[in-house]
Image 1 (cartoon, rainbow, N blue to C red):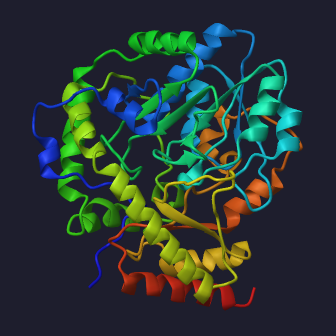
Image 2 (image 1 turned 120 degrees about the vertical axis):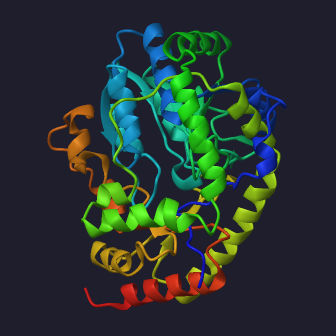
Length: 408
């Protein structure tokens, strides 16, 4: 029987990573890895975004709007709401994760604080036009690299050309502390402001750090083929059985955002694991290229989402594909989701279509966001984990081919 495949290819921890002592300066190690002058470690990617938005709001208190893609993680909406900001949503280019330039131009104005282009699933989006439009309006650009730690935008890390970038160190994002985040800030004065904000918003809280440490030990024990059916498969299948698509996709977030400093032991664990990340990412890219070639051969009607920035090299925690229409995507989901083959949704819905997060999104009457909603209705994520073996991937290809060939 094939092992259960996780939805994304996260870096497994080794027992030696968990030993006490060692280098606790994870920020310094990440800065060297990314080729950045400094990296600020936070307790989550969401916390890193909260810190960034808070520091920017202090600098420009009259600006109270944040612009993000319509199809992105709901935690972006919760972070904006936490900071007292209005989240405005921008449509996408057709069949793409890139922000629509015309839509962004119409949204940007004197109240715009920041624009958040998103490198979803490690795919590097084109941020050149985003920076031009945002800066013309006096706004900052914060790249959402939550799933793209190690991705390159040409010769530099993603985010290196923008004002800020944040990464997630959560489960399934490559390097993990179970929960953690990293914030990179280009401007020295703004970097100092973010560090000051973090000291105020996120002091050390031993209860949260103890909880995350126990969860990290659980991850080390269960994130392996023998443990995944219990840790991931069972909750997924229960959510699907009760018709809870949001829960099955992992999008049922608490509106409370924990804010606390990451302890020395978890930073040391991350520093040790980081040494293996470059090889893990290279293996993942090679595996993704092989699988995409097989998908193109066996299911040519599928469209695979690639990096859109020129010369970019993304990370590959999963492979995003677009089916020809929503009905065929639903047929593929029915055949594959919850079957232990690592096929899932990146997010359950476009942001405006989550009932529980409507309070965090500014009302934009008359804007239907057709391109992003079309993307959300047709997209599917296929795990790029090495635990999805060749036999399992063949089953995925067969099911996708059957879904594509069915009559609408």
